Amino acid sequence: MVHVTGADRVYEAIYQAVLERRLSPGERLREQELAEQFNVSRTLVRQALQRLAQEQVIELLHNRGARVPIPSLEDAGSVFDARRVVECEVARQLAGRLSAEQLQTLQHLADGETEADRMGEHALAIRLSGEFHQAMADMHGNPVMARWLNGLLPTTSLLMSRFKRQGGQVCVAHRHVDLISALQKSPAAAGAEMRKHLNELEQSLTAPATPRRQLRDVFQAYRDSPE
Image (cartoon, rainbow, N blue to C red):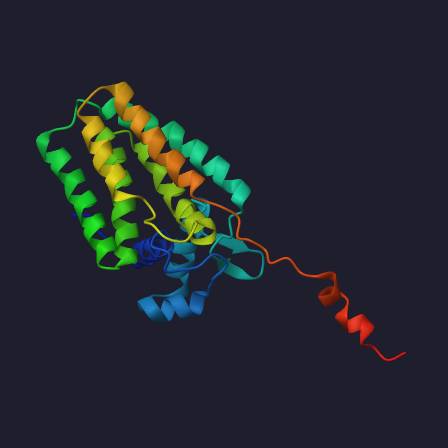
């Protein structure tokens, strides 16, 4: 039986809160508040924050505590390039190798995600979407790949929070169903379907429109100033 420490509980809660978009980009994480919330010492909170920072799930600011990162739209290219390297290879190597039980696990997650989204339970849908991708990496059996993906998913969620176009799921569940189908075919089909899926996610990101200001509004204060 694995012993779960107070630091583990804090780590897991913050990780999931970032993944599910319950914590927003730039939100501060104060040691004392976290210690009170989880009824643990600040030392254990600090241990959890250090671990999360090492995995780039949060940022530690010099003399200013911790905060949720604020990824830029330019970061998306790096994140999705890394995910394509890891996940397309995972899908390719899993093709034709999954047991009926493993396929059922993936199908259960996809069905749960669809139902959660239909019911408006978006945090649950986001969590199940991440669990689908993590389950594939775990089934592959390479702990390094699983760890890499584990570090990329929260950043993906933050990017979606900041830049995803309004409407639609974070990870379209029907694409997960298509992935399950492709995994029962050839390595080429599975890798191509995963690439298509990740490309769609990246392409759903767009910079928020900045309202165009009229010059008369910019210089209003100067025009109205007494001479």
